[in-house]
Length: 363
Image (tube, rainbow, N blue to C red; front, side):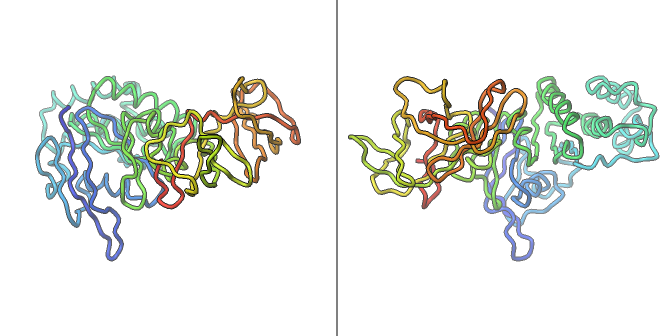
């Protein structure tokens, strides 16, 4: 597949602080790529470098095969949507949408055509004569997206566009953004710290930490086979359960021993060699722990005690005390467990993750 945006050996320093570190990234034509990470990881800085709002210290940026490293933002063929709506308060929605085109002295007929198309795609035709003060937050963000849309560019950049909205509006606009991408098939690069946005919107996710990409892959791979301990802990709500221990020989196989309790690794598919005595971290997601009637014949069964129950509607979240650890377990919302109740549990090792404690890399 052709590349839309190529980033080669990109570094950016603010004084003595290395914000981006020799970063390489190829973004495919028509791809929805999400840059995901906590505050300060460099995701917005990377987006601003692509947009031309920041000059890199080293490296090059190519858009559609053209070196744009030192080009002005207006010449890069991008449309950008910010966290703040950045609308002109004195202008109507229609004037906000057409402002950039009028500055570029585009013929009025073409301006009208593009504004009408953007308004139709985003379903904001009834709002065209209103001013931003008369709009809700969701409507203002639609207008901000429309302002990028009218430019008819190859690459759209989104910098946390939904973070100022309430939960319901965020969910609605997430769906609209996905629909928009399926309709336009343009390349979209989207920055967020919200893992739900990343998992639901992305073709691929680049998880960043300290100016480096930790893992770049599709959402399923990142969720089910995280490359390292950071990615495993960052993705998932609640977070993956982690049990620190060491590998021990166990009836001709290997097990993880922690606080005197052994967890057999039958069904776990290792990608690297494992050795007895190796310090490891066993990771299991809350939905991959079976409780009571879900425990199957042949499972390795352990006992735990319910500490807290959190009803969440469709699901219940249980916090269990077991072998010196607190485990979170997701069960069907119809099931109830009182604190203090003893339960049987079993790990689905085929879906577990195992990490080397020293390198924190997946084994």
